[in-house]
Image (cartoon, rainbow, N blue to C red):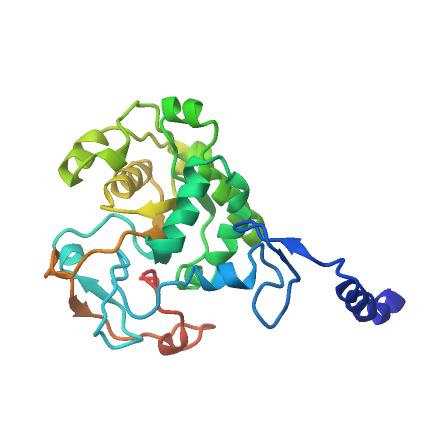
Length: 286
């Protein structure tokens, strides 16, 4: 064992010199050698693709992840919408904005059968998830059975499995079912989305008492997440936090009420860094 520890660095240097440590980027297909310097050492994306998929930064609503451009850092806040109609989930973690390269990445993942991209997407979420308490299980957002048969896979479940492997957390698709054949949400307006989802989700009684991360790929109006969370809470889940890879941006001109409506004082917790040193995200624990 001591011998292997001593020759390990030399072997790694030799494989790097011979080009044997090269990988293929899952997004663009380019060859790259993992490096500590550019953050690709444990990843599946080359440095160029990582740079094209930047995370959301700065203060944002802790319940819906809408950015607050002028808010003071370190103090989580609630937007006007979340004050008036609080969503049923407790906290939210989100990686990035659903635009440009991240949008193309997710569409490729979702509709073009490239579920191998789950291995590239899961590590992107890790820093965002530092805001949330660890759950008992990850629950992927289910597809209606008719759409699952047509597509052949649920990209969110593939993402959940990749994230579960990274964090050593169980993935429980059995805790949330979606037997109804509702219309695709992407074709509907906000009110139509809510009507379309009425009674769509079923959660079994053995969800009772569990702390759960409800995982989805894209957050738009929140109608799907709301209906799914309510089903889990109705089954007795102890806590539900929402985790998404991306959220659609809202134009300030279209939503003038989306501004910090309530700032909560920072509160340090035992064993954690002071809030101002924690990642800016939407999911600081209550």
